[in-house]
Amino acid sequence: MLQYVSMKHILDSQSFDRAELAALFDAADRLMAEPASPLKGKVMATMFYEPSTRTRLSFEAAMLRLGGEVISTENASEFSSAAKGETIEDTTRVISRYADVLVIRHPVEGTVAKAVSVATIPVINAGDGGGGQHPTQSLLDLYTIHREIGRLDNLKVAMVGDLKYGRTIRSLAPMLSKYKNNTIHFVSPVGLRADDNLKKYLNKKRVKYTETENLAAVVPKVDVLYQTRIQRERFSSNDEYLKYKGVYVIDRAMANSMKKGAIIMHPLPRVDEILPEVDSSPHAKYFEQAGYGLYVRMALLESLLS
Ligand code: CP
Image 1 (cartoon, protein in one colour):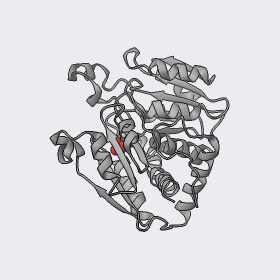
Image 2 (spheres, rainbow, N blue to C red):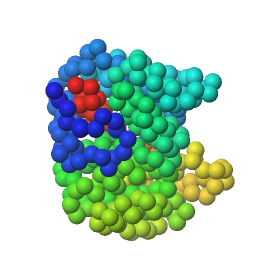
Image 3 (cartoon, rainbow, N blue to C red):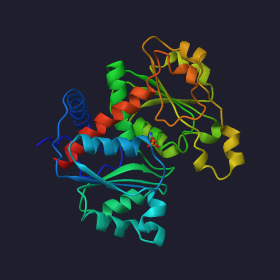
Image 4 (cartoon, rainbow, N blue to C red):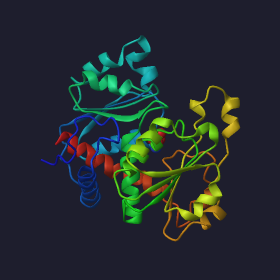
């Protein structure tokens, strides 16, 4: 048995402990080095009620590479029976009879928890509303830091952009709180600051953090520059979005001001917040980050279904 994650369902990032994370990352290293097919005969269902490229396709590629099969629906909001008014609970009850694991992304926070309440198979949160979490993104984010920097403590990490609606931030900050002496620099406009619940959590865990609007002042200090997109789809109007669009843009000059060995990350997709001229910088690691997602999700599926 290769069960290195004790949870049945993956709802948030707080629930992982350091031993589980270390075992998961060892498994991702192993699966990157040695292809294996331990999930032959297993079926994964993906139900995405919001757009996705990386999360959905890396989960599906992970399952296929492990020897399993995938069932799915294109745009679950439109093509699943949710369009006819079916509840997520009924959808989950049915899929529990067809598949061995269910991966869900939904625009309404709390929907994945509703699925978990009735599921008889493991459920994975692949992004849960503008105020929710994206725990498997934080797993691959942490794995990227581990591989590219070689440690998970004594880090200075800038989290930049839309911190109000960014579920990747809401998942990664608690992950970093599990390790020693990390400092988070939240960089955002006042109207897009990280929410109070996240800051209360960091206070409870005694994680040092600062809040600023000044990106240029922070960049030369940090080991990780975690840029995020201003999420047009979360704003109540286009005018509101345009107030923030382009507020922080990383260009080559800014990348050149980083410390040796420091890395730029981004959960992707990007719009205009990292210029293409940065892609060839030795600091740019966002495409490696997306690639690592495949192996981390392979390790997670192997653990949940073994
Ligand atoms: N990082 C991320 O969640 O990307 P997708 O929206 O493409 O899945």
